[in-house]
Length: 607
Image 1 (cartoon, rainbow, N blue to C red):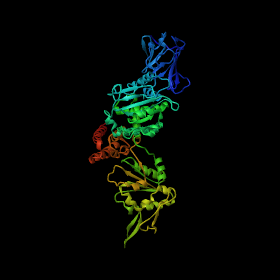
Image 2 (image 1 turned 45 degrees about the vertical axis):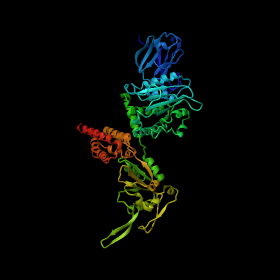
Image 3 (image 1 turned 180 degrees about the vertical axis):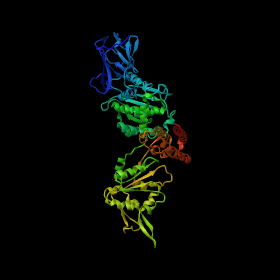
Image 4 (image 1 turned 90 degrees about the vertical axis):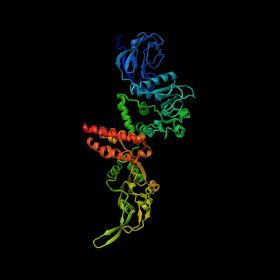
């Protein structure tokens, strides 16, 4: 039977609150549809259709269910004109006939499955909702992900357990594909705990990553891998930066004896029963915000990270979004420091050291600060093992002339900088500051480096062993002098800074930045950088993580120049790491990476 839409049967686009359970023309949040008609449908007059779960559903007298596919059996009375009722199955508009559903071959841009799932999660346990109704909506929202966001052949299993009663804890989410249909399970899971409203809190959900109560296996290799918790820390920073939502991450997901800290539990009193029962097993938790857009970002972040760990295959339609999320996660794996933040810290603490792996732009950033924030009023010096107290502070140096040899006191780099800072701000940039023994190089001058005393006007002074060239022996730190050092954390030949030095300096970590690489627009550079960073993040112990090559190894004006940098700079560095045995569990992955990279470079040359 053909379907005709006349003036009396007009499909109009309206907008409804995604959390409403009935049609509301005054809301302006999300699109829904309704039918205007003068026709009577048995006991149903003017059926109104809104989204509930994944489908358009009738919310009028006579309907027995609020979600799922509709047929005549879902109504209390005879449907006289069934061709005027419309519902949604997947992306196809369908209408109800006495014998079932018929395809209208129409397309409707319905609520994407991820948005639908985020809505269900953010709703928590809505007021006046029955267990069966919530379970049906949740099941439909979960199932539609597979075939629209992830491949339908992805191995997954989900649980929906909704139980009313004060002592029960309801939950829904994903468990290991081999988990039983009910009861306790093992391994990693993505679970949300919906709760109803009370006098102080609206209905909401706690979205979590949880280890099953029966133990880590079969996901011990995921839960115990360094990269899993590093990705979660990156996700925590990502959520804070993008939507201003706080998440908690346990330091060690495999520690099932450590409950969620009290300070976190106190922030979410509505989830006290959840924490009481599963607090030892939860290792990542975030309260899903009620704002629809923020809820979708939070749900997508944890879902796509879980899918990444489970090796679910994204469909082409969603691959761009998921790739963008993974790159955003890489961007937030390490704390980032902008030049403005560094300058602010430098003016506050006066003595700052930039530390990090090779090639992260530490020296470049220091020189930018000298140029842009100090207008070149300063100087750069470089430490090496031959730098001594006499070089940096003062010492007796030979003065050779045609007729005689004499010895004079020569001011070092620090003394010269102190003199230059008498008339205004002056920056002393010390490159590779830990390649010399800084405690010996400073000597008694270390007592001048007291930032809080200098800021309060209490300028420290020390007496030198011998007079300077101007006849003075007392050395005072002026308020205008700032010291900015850089140090390479991968260099094992360096001296370790002792605690006396560390107390006087602020240390800022500078890590690789994928954004810098991606912005140059060379696909091989971004791919090579991403793969290498993933290996270090996923498998390296903490001491080896400091060896990850920085973004400067992947920067070039052209692809031929990039290939040269990779062949003659990056690969030799990685081979040196392998030769020294410094990579630990990364070893085999790095060898495979080198093989892959050499193949990509060779193919590029042939092309």
